[in-house]
Image: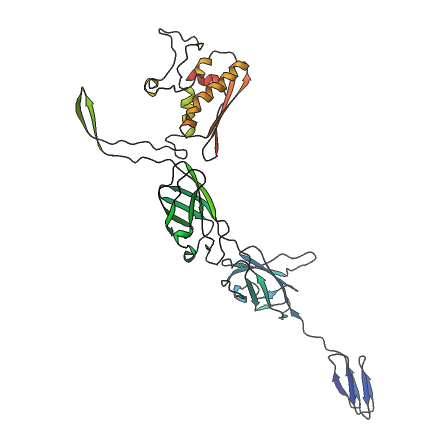
Length: 413
């Protein structure tokens, strides 16, 4: 008997001339004088498909396949990233497999680490080659688009004095986008002088810009610097945070090496060449630490008033405290805490401790070293008082100084 083999991809009909007909699967056959064998459908070959691409932050992509990927899946050269609508090109730096999902033994994801971030919101395409299935299955669907996610540059800090303002960014800036000085702005927030930006330049690393202004910034005044909206990073991501505020510090006098001269008994006395330094100080730059100024102010004995009750110090004349320079300053320095050294610890004493401490530190507010001074006193036991001073500086930051046993400090002072 002659056999005629017929292969069907899908259900269909076969016509042949023969005597006998053999069916392996359902089908239709019409034959006259010939033997026909009808064979079933042939299964298509197995493949692996790329089914999704998602961003994992600005520097990574996650590729998901329908079966666990193998072959050259860990080779960065297996992935080509193409910008479709004007984004900067992307390069894969390294590849790592993800973790298996619930009920899975092998992972179906690959994480691509990028050499740099792309252009935010731009569309890219990933093309995969060299990746196979776990049993060598060919890669069928190997291309898919995705939208890049990227951070945008922003101003993070600013400082300024005289005719210079320095601003720092969270990432490098493309020099071509820096713009002309006229599109930068430095404006006072309150009573400072209005200035014009005359020059702007990026420093090495392109993450810091220096602005030149005219005229000088007004000292101890707040300013706001505003960067142009055209500023962008090398990937084309435009600036997000354009403003930063700063406080212009008080002017600092320079050192001098001029010759000294003095008058003695009405005549000019030449004391030769010498050096002197005007110690710089401002709300942001102090000649000594803040806690040292508090210490000196609290434990220097202020001159007692005529109606103050004096502790029993003895001596002839009776000790009344005071600083010799008060004679020339026209005021009083130090505190009256020394008057309380032998006082009982009660509500009246605690009230005087707070009053005397505030009085002693008031000069720091008058001189611009602090915006506010707060003092609290607490009774610890029958013979112990704790004093705590909080200095609120002009920049809004606080600094606290505490004396857990004030009475022992008064005896030592």
